[in-house]
Length: 243
Image (tube, rainbow, N blue to C red; front, side):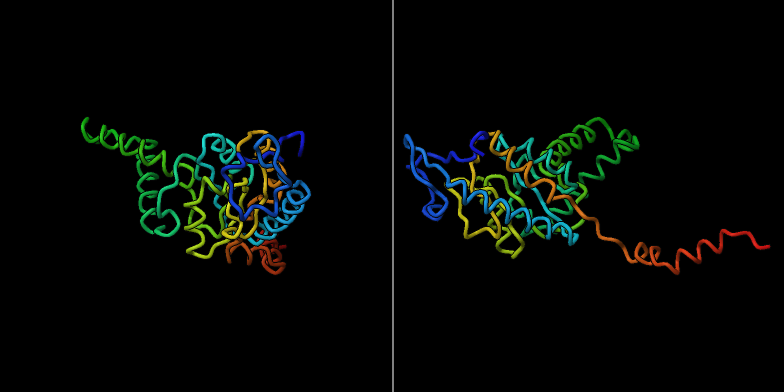
């Protein structure tokens, strides 16, 4: 963790007193994390994420800060979860019904482009549709396959993504976060106190957590029935030619 600068906090003049228990001290005007606390919270968050994801729950990864956008995108690809990386749309959680309509609109335009249906529009209509697509893509590309409101969120830099955390708190969904010295731990269910301003630090923490975040897909009723021994035996009987 020292090698990856996980211990370095923010300017001691700008900090959250709620993070005091996780700060070792100050060096050259910069807060320094107590890495024994960081290590303990990292282990606890790993366990909590593993239990959460193994139960088939949906997790939304949030990283809209410039330094975290690629990390969030890569993490979503590795784990199979949806992500928000460009901008947090107010109401994305608390007004998901409206957001879902816009996501459907985005998916429809994309499908029309793939099928060539968009070429049926006149020049003006097509230009307007493409402009609309550009706006929708920036907002919803990472959640285009999300079927329902998430059961929890994982935010990279809880202070920067405070709006997402507030919305999650309104709904009472589980919050996982990486918090710098300006974070609000009481707003999160599970968190890792760490340097949120350094790429090496963020990559270290997310790489540690990634294996525990892998998405488990819930089986449908039909899939569960198909896996029953009786169903397999019946299928095998049908395929066996009668003598």
